[in-house]
Amino acid sequence: MNLIVGAPWWLAALLVLILLAAAVEDAVRFRISNITCLGVCCCAIVAMALNGFPLALWQNLVVFALVLTIGTAAFAAGWLGGGDVKLIAATGLWFGFRSAVALIAAILIAGGIVAVVYIAARSVRRIGSESKNRDGRIPYGIAVVAGTLLVIAIQLTSKPVNSFDDVRARAFKYR
Image (cartoon, rainbow, N blue to C red; front, side, top):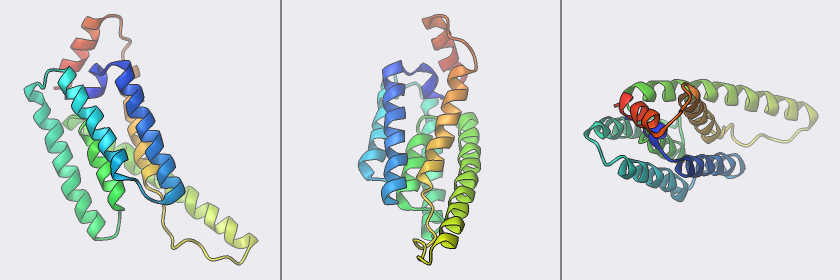
C-alpha cells in the first residue's frame, strides 16, 4: 500500500523534513543517526494508523524486511553504511511492491550521480593541493533522500487531487 498518497500534508511535510535532515547529517558527518531513521519509521506508523491499518500493509512490511535483510548483507560486505541501510528500510515502510521497485531504481540512479559528483570533486581538489582524500567514502544518504523525494514527488503529482474521495481512491489503488 502506498502510504504517501493518503497521508495528510503535515505528515508528508514532516517526512520530507526528516529526510532532508538525514541528507544533511550524512553530508556533514558521514553518519545517519538512529533517531533520524526512527523518525521516518514513526511517520510511517502514523500514516498506517490514519489509514486504519488495512491488510494491504503486509506489502510494506515485506518491503521493509527485504530491504533490511539485503541491506544488512551489503553493509557486511562494506558496500553501504549502517545508517544508509536503516534509512532505506525505513523509507520502504512507506511503499508497497510497485512503488518499492521505483524507489530502489531512483535511489540507485541518484547514487550513481552522487558518486560521480564526489569522485569528480575529489579529483579537482587533489589537483589543487597535495592533501589526502577522506578514505573514499561517499555519503549515500544523499542518494537515498534524493531518490525517495523523487518517487514521492512523482506519486503526489501524477494526478490532481480534487476531493477527499480522490485521495481515498488513490490510496486504495496502491494496495
